[in-house]
Image (cartoon, rainbow, N blue to C red):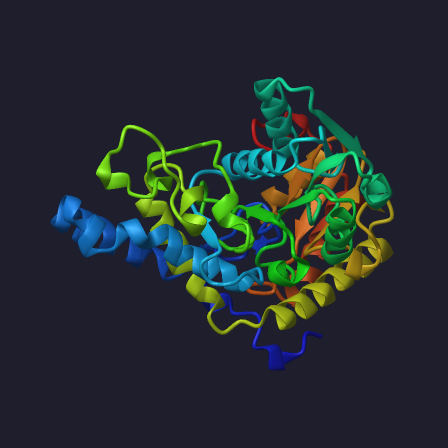
Length: 400
């Protein structure tokens, strides 16, 4: 049982459909209860009544820094080192391009096969754009440490892998990267709000992440970027947008980067999405990330034990050691797509990743051990009765 002294879960802070067991917060977090009212206020009162005055009167222009500080405390970053805006792919491009400029004599970007494809795609696109003979070198996750040599310019990794939840040792890999004279870029898409992160303690140069998963910012919520404070004023942004300018409303004809993290801003803040995120992050005001992690491990360990004892057709694809995985558990199953569709039809919501991975996220903010056991009850019934074996469930949807 989860230790009630952690004060988790806090289900009343979220809008969740009745009877739904939501095991997909690792892909899209649910709606925090306070968000609709706050959004309505911004739309009706601020945008509706204040019009363009909202940029000053309602402090819309300050949102990227203000919300960045909310995120910073959840990822172990100092105040003023995180800014918000754009998508995660854009932030990956920003961080990676800046990192390569810091090591002009080196040509290799090192990543792993567990990294999210968009990160690798952005690296490939940047390499083509630069046209300077850079190479993207991709190794297996367990081979990363041994592949960090003095020819590496940048190590770019997602701390928690999206398919299996395998978690890299941030401190050890960052230390090895620096010993080799390379720059470290971490993607925290599956870490922020799921596991304790100490960016300042790790010493990494850059980190990026999205906010629509464990941070519950809503579909399309803005991404974040962190730059280590001692290097930020030397970073040259490849995407030199007007709001990264030192004086955007001076409308100077040439770009001059802002001081500090402000230079990593690009375009106009998405005020409605940023407002939803700002309100959603208040859920965390009294949540201890250590207690959350302990509860997450308890839930995932219970899930693994129940599935392995009752669903023998599934094979654990995540690391068995909870210290080596994030807040999700993945099982391989040859009919995984149809089985997941059948689960969703029965109001147990997880998701699927090709070629055979059934993913389940464990977010103690709104899940408890009763939810876990009930989910496995339904999974067991689906497998034993072959309820997944229907043509309509095997037909792939656009989003899996």
